Length: 451
Ligand SMILES: Nc1ncnc2c1ncn2[C@@H]1O[C@H](COP(=O)(O)OP(=O)(O)O)[C@@H](O)[C@H]1O
Ligand SMILES: N[C@@H](CC(=O)OP(=O)(O)O)C(=O)O
Image 1: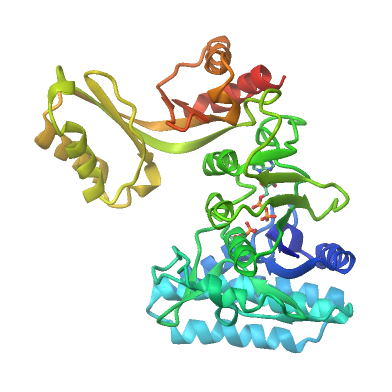
Image 2: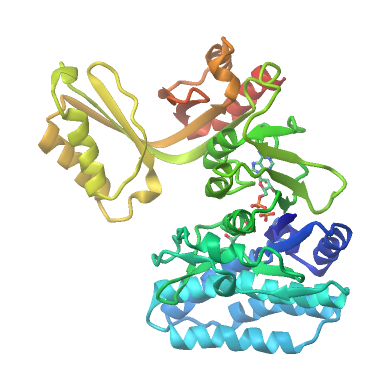
């Protein structure tokens, strides 16, 4: 039995929905379908989720909402028209949008979550109607009814573990169940969304809940590639990748699969297939617990991500001061900033974090001031245009010369290294460089590992 999740790129138009219908008709093992909101039809297009966010912002700021609402409804209207579905569904979508705009007015975080959920919720209803028209015995089921119960912090839903028992009850259903991705319900009855891209998370939760044999994640790429296809022409397609490798790479820029979506699955060892809606004949990439080709591909992927800040401090005999690191980290915890890396030397220590966590005016200055007051460093420096390259592979533990290749690539490109950190797991190597050097670094490294 399978769960299939279709991403926004697979559901962006009637033409795409026809492909999805064909996939479902030809694979009776798929018993649960999780859907995203309509995504981009072409590069300059908008994602429906982004327009729903615009709508919430417009109401908050007292701006005109008509054009935005027309854009949102227009996307569903064109699919209803092109597929010849019942127009009544559009009226119900308009009523739902208006209901949230009225009942949640003045409560922006809740309004935002409720509106964001409409993208997937409307799509699930529309797709169910289309499946029924095709003669597939399908039923829309809301996250509430199927049992996706989550924490109550807006836009940051975390699944409550009791959900799995509730979802399991639906395991032997005769109908094909169509579930909107991206949100759940809190115990107080609020709609709460997962972080952006979170329909992948819903798919994983349903897969684990119903104890499916496999989770098929349909997108617009035939494989996960060893480097971002926008940076490298014809990159190496990955046949198999482990959960741990994928988690590290998706966290660091492989946006094809949400980094939090593996957690429900790796604990119970259910494989994920990344598949292409436009080429269902291609098997795609399989995410599994272990892979056999480690000698051949000790490194499986290289990625990079920007938007990091690092703060480095130096103090003579720092290593002798008991509790120095802990006091430094406490300053970040007090500021509610979670830390990515803490590379250390004998007399220096660096803290690297995602810059977007600095949300208050002058917060960076406040942190530096606090560090100076509490820890009296001799020297302190800040880098705020940091990109982090990540080289990932289970083979790193066994195969020598991996770091050498990375250093060679950077030396050949004349790129200055600002930080190096190897995770304790020894499956990843992190290298901090300037944002401007990112593309050249990825190209050079790709050549070394896969060229
Ligand atoms: N290593 C990679 N291999 C393949 N695609 C990648 C990789 N890294 C990032 N991507 C991007 O991920 C995109 C698909 O993810 P996403 O937009 O979430 O799809 P969907 O809308 O189907 O959920 C691709 O179009 C591609 O640009
Ligand atoms: N629609 C939501 C959730 C999602 O997962 O979408 P997609 O599958 O298109 O990445 C978003 O844009 O964030």
